[in-house]
Amino acid sequence: MCVYPFKAESLSFLSTLEKDHKTDMPNLSTHENMIHNIFVLELISRIAMSTLFGFAVLCFGYTLTPNIQKKQRTEFIHIFARILFMLGSAFTIVYGTLEFILPLNSIATQVHTVICLVLAATVLFIDPNKEGAPAFSFLSGALIFLLVTLTPFLDPKPLYRAHSVDWLVYFHIGTGALGEAIFAVVFCTSLLYLWNYHKLKQRKLASSGSLTSLSSIEKLVEKSSLFGLTFITLSLLSGIALIFIGKFTTQVGFIKILWAFLVWGWYVMTIFGRSLWGWRGKKGAKLAIFGMILLMLGLFGTIWHYF
Image (cartoon, rainbow, N blue to C red; front, side):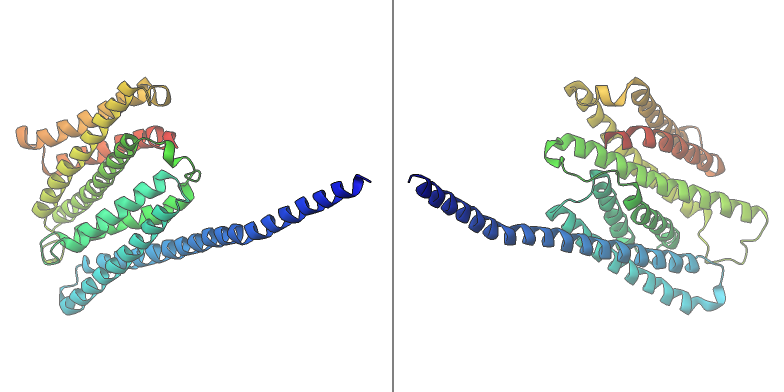
């Protein structure tokens, strides 16, 4: 006789579980749909960023070609390139906002997105009529295009442990990545300097008024190097603080720490050598190129190891 009450209680318990399951299903489906929609929007934003910045780089590259007979067309293409940069920056803001709402990628992708936005804002705020602006826009755009296109393929894993990362780690990685991005611009500008120097030696720049002069490139290299050294120094100081706290000692290793100081010392020597020992022009460009090689060797062994 006591079996039936037990069955009734069991059936009531199962019915409540079924009701709870049915009420929870829409919430789970909504959450999954939200993740799917954000993923699709991020994918569309990434494709738009890569396309817009890529075409902008091609337009800026056209304005650097020696074609003095088509000055009006060059000005129109330069304006069109800046419009493409504005649209690319807008999609970058959309992508960064979506990553802030629901981080689906690692901190490396987020840091590179911030770098792209900062470089794009620099290109937009710089005077388009200023000497050396087209070359700077072209080199910065090329760097942005590479970061936007290659970062998704280098993203190692999703950012599911973002709450466990200290703010000082974000500061260390962010300033380091921004400094490396600026020195990448210095690297490209130094290559442009050597190329113009080679053409000048062959006396092929006499009628090429649209190309950037060597003096303006030298000023761009010098100012960019100072900004890059500032961010690298901040990253190095925050890294030292993290070592004393005890968060990076076992992860980085003594060799990589020593290499970071070596790269920092190289750039300090290069920058002070410009004013103290006259390491300008062709020699300064070669030193900047070699410094970027040292920086890249340390990049793949240090920053990417954190993820």
